[in-house]
Length: 114
Image 1 (tube, helix red, strand yellow):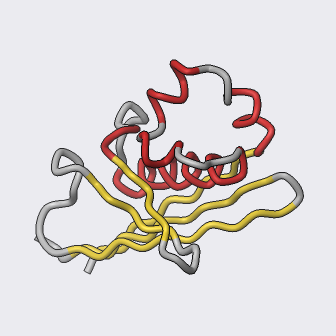
Image 2 (cartoon, helix red, strand yellow):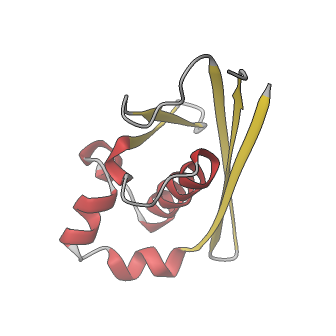
C-alpha cells in the first residue's frame, strides 16, 4: 500500500480579493462550487484542490479536473476526472478546517502498489 498526502494553507482574504475576477473564478472553480459560496467556502475548495495536486504530484493546471462536493453534514468529498484519477484501486479522503482567517486542508491517498 502506498500512502500519499497533500496539505495546503490559504488566507481567506486572498480568495476574497479574487471574488470579482471572473477569469480566475472560472479557471479554478466549477459552476457547482460557485453556487452560494462565500470566500470561506471557496478558500476550502481552493486549499483542497491544491492538496490534491500535492498528493497526486500534479501541476496546478488541473483545476477543473477536481470538483469538491459537500455532504449535508458539511464533509467535503473529492471528485476527480478520469484524466487525473490514480490507476488501480485507491481510496481518497480529505478534511478542512478554518481559524483566524486561515483555511487548512489535507488530502490522503491510499493506493495499491502496482
